[in-house]
Amino acid sequence: MKKLISVFAIALFLSIPLAANADYVGTATMALSAGGDAVGGDLLLYYGTVTSSSFGYYYSGGIFCISSGAMQSTEDLAFNTITSYNGTFKSDTGGLHVITPNFITLSEAAWIADKWITTLGSSSDAHREAAQLAIWAVLGMTLANGPAINYLGVIPGAQTLYDDAIAYNTSNGNYTTSNWYAAYNAQDYLTPVPEPGILILLGIAMSAIGMASWKIRKI
Image (cartoon, rainbow, N blue to C red):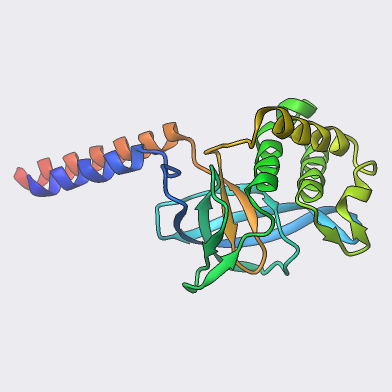
């Protein structure tokens, strides 16, 4: 019976959104790759696949780069919520990674990460490239051949996303979202938070497995 209760406790935990109220969430090892057209000497499409994590995180797909560090093929990234944080983040080695810039501009990047598909009308690679460039521009990043803001006119849609993100934050205050983690290490990324519905299904599945195994042992 105790084991059955434990299974239900795990299922309940998995049904709760991982981005709750904490800043630092945990670490995950991600296999990383980049591709797409180069702008200013930098690539605009980034992909990550979680191979393991300390907090039950799983994901495989597109992510957004938010730093100019050197990308590694595999990184142990420290995951943090970005709903209101402004200060320092824990690194995977237990040290501190100073967030640059602050939450104001990170919130603009989060707005773009949330709104690029509805704003541009599709999730195509071309529109994802526009979103990546706009994110770099609002973060004030300098690319290999100059500031990211100078390249907004090169990728269709990038200027629109940039302008809308600035306008939203100026008119409505800093944008908050629980849909993205900020993952930090050698190079930093915005990485999606799993949908609560998916977590609930996973929790139910674990409960079913636990109940089945309990019944088998009882028989």
